[in-house]
Each structure stands twice: as structure tokens, then as C-alpha cells.
Amino acid sequence: MPHRDEVPRDRRLRVTEVYASVQGESTHVGKPMVFIRLTGCPLRCTWCDSTFTFQGGTWRDVDDVVAEVLRFGLPAVEVTGGEPLMQPNAVGLMQKLLDAGLEVLLETSGALAIDGVPPGVRVILDLKAPGSAMEDRNRWENLDVLDRDGEVKFVLADRTDYEWAREVIRQRGLAARWPVHFSPVWGVLSPATLVEWMVTDRVAARLMLQVHKVIWDPAARGV
Image (spheres, rainbow, N blue to C red):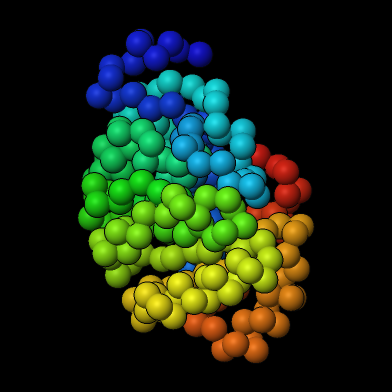
């Protein structure tokens, strides 16, 4: 593994993995694309399914990562983590991917500012409900700069999370501006139960299941 100082500071990224699969979440579900999973996250959500990204990874040059993505020959790519925006050079990475003619998605926790994300990147903003133990890390100002191509996601562990998210949607008028998704914590909240709540309340959100966990073993990586 290259040492951090072997890669120029202005082109340096710490990468956990790069792989091709189908999108498991958002309105892009089922779409074949490349995933760039960056290393590191400032949050510690109770239900996190990507704790392997908290440390480790490989120091790589941005151009090297872009070249690997292009070799897959797919038209779309998602930058995810961890929390991608922890790394300043993630912005340059996304711009280079756009310049290469790719459709670019960003999955972000919502805890860090998104105003520096290049125009044209489709941002999926993950708002943290109380059950994550990270509710106080939500950066609500991000809703003021999320563009019309963005999406909002809530991961829900229980009824308290659901009611909280339902009220956030209502109070902040989210559904009038973006697609809004409710994703049950895998193995904790039954999707059928969540659907019952959503239908009863006529909530302005969509059920979102992690399709990759339906297709493959939920603990599998690189899929």
C-alpha cells in the first residue's frame, strides 16, 4: 500500500474499494454503475453497515481512481463511504468524473457542507434520525443548497424515528422539492411494519429497501 506522502497532497484520496454493481438505493435503484467507497467517517451511527470504512484503505491518486472507473465502461458512478466529503480531494474527483462524461452520484451523511459539491452531481442526502444517535450532527443548512436533482433519505430504526422523519418532511416541505426515501434498518425494523405506518399516515415518502442486500448476502462487500 502506498504511503500517504507518496501521493501528491492535492491529488490524494484514501480509498476503501472501487467496484461495479447495481445501485441498491435511491431513485437510481437497479442501475448498473461503479462505486467508489472512500475511507473515513466523522459519525458513528448505531446501525452503520459500513464500519469497515472507518480505517484502513489505500492512498491513491485521483487520476488513477478515475482511470479505474472508466475501465469498467459503465455510464454512472457513485462516490460513497464512509463520508466522502471528509476528504477535500473528493470534490476534484467528482469534477473529473463529470468531465469524463459520467453521471455522478454522491451519498453523504448530511453532516458536512455540500455547497462545494460540483454542479451536476446528484446528491443523496442522508438525514440522521434519533435512533442513529447522530441526530445532532444534521447540517440543516444543506437543505438550502440541495438542488432539484438531489434526494433525501432517512434510515429508520423504530416508530420514534418514523414519527420524527414524518414531521421533518411536513415542517420543512421536503416532498415538494425532492424525492424522499424511508429505509428501514436491516434486520431491525420490518419493512412491512414501515409500509403500514406510511400508508396509514399517507406520508409523502417512498419505501426504499437496500436491494443489494436482497440479491447478495447482507454482509457481502464489493457488491
